[in-house]
Image: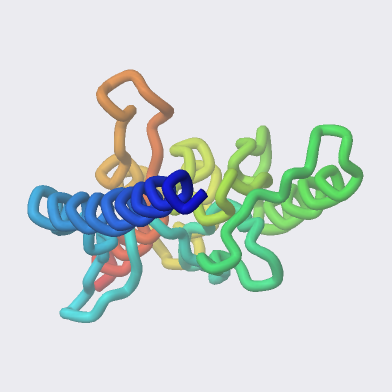
Length: 189
């Protein structure tokens, strides 16, 4: 019996070391050499201090800043350790109530007209750092008024920070909220 079990145990140990340790370490090393900034978390610094990452959203509540998408990470918005979607379906009363509350918040802030979907629903991870250009545009009047800027200045800033479709055809144009808010501070700097 030992002659049958021994090869299985040796192969299990070998593949565990090879695929569970050596391969991940090699890929991490290659990624660190080929893409050091991305492998390091795509951190954004301001004045030598890390203020966030391009990959993880942050909560901004002030009228002076662009607001991100709603976060589905529980009581603490944009908590990366609680990353998950809400998994609420289109017939969910809780989803309907959440969307209605988010629309009411936007209406109270002065948004009129159509409300973009990403303004009232969370992303799959609940940590999305980007918003659609449409959501950025509907926030422009509030930010312009709060900062004493013209709406044109805010729209120009959105156009400056906007990122296009990935490879020219994947996804939609988007704006990284942290980058946009940092550019907003720099504009008034």
